[in-house]
Length: 115
Image 1 (cartoon, rainbow, N blue to C red):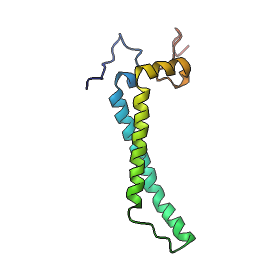
Image 2 (cartoon, helix red, strand yellow; image 1 turned 180 degrees about the vertical axis):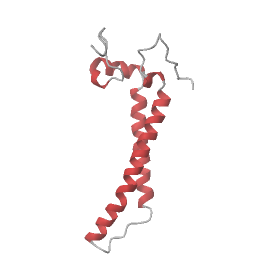
Image 3 (cartoon, helix red, strand yellow; image 1 turned 45 degrees about the horizontal axis):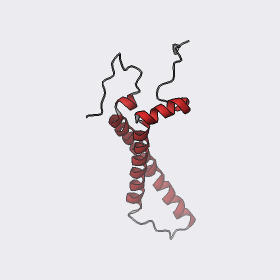
Image 4 (cartoon, one colour; image 1 turned 30 degrees about the vertical axis):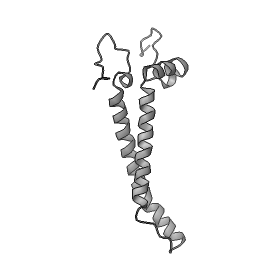
């Protein structure tokens, strides 16, 4: 992949998200998709049971699972898009300057992390 950077001693301060944005985006998408799909498929049966307990005549269409899973995948894609935007060097620089507590690498200010 053309945007991949090998981390060496000369670019040790480069966040891996910035050095390898495609990989960071893919990893974020996979993690978000897995978590959201598990949550959706665990919650849907409980929601359906709850609806049936309220009124026995409630009919949940067969496409409800597919629709809910589709929403979960779209949400994971949006999360991955935000990750990709945050991996842009210019955005990362802005984050480091204005919201350093969200920066992928904590500013050292010349001090060692253990100090």
